[in-house]
Length: 63
Image 1 (cartoon, one colour):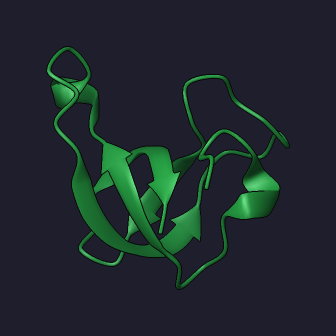
Image 2 (image 1 turned 180 degrees about the vertical axis):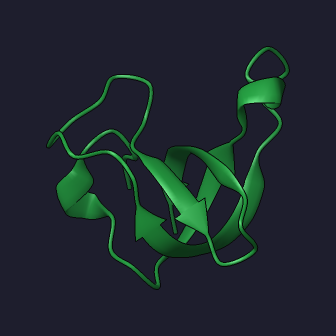
Image 3 (image 1 turned 135 degrees about the horizontal axis):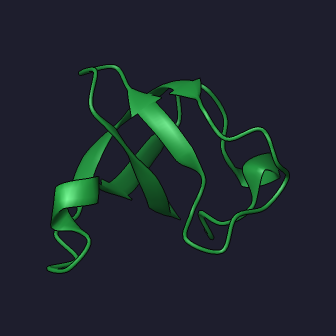
């Protein structure tokens, strides 16, 4: 599922995110959403979330 729409992402969902420092390499990290940080309904680079591990990144894919 697409990570650019806030409606696709729920707390507790498993997602693939890209961290700020990994944007050039497109290295994805899998985790569980703890908190949704983006307030707008859509963001073209992906909705920003905090994972349960404390990591922050933009969602590229919802599993």
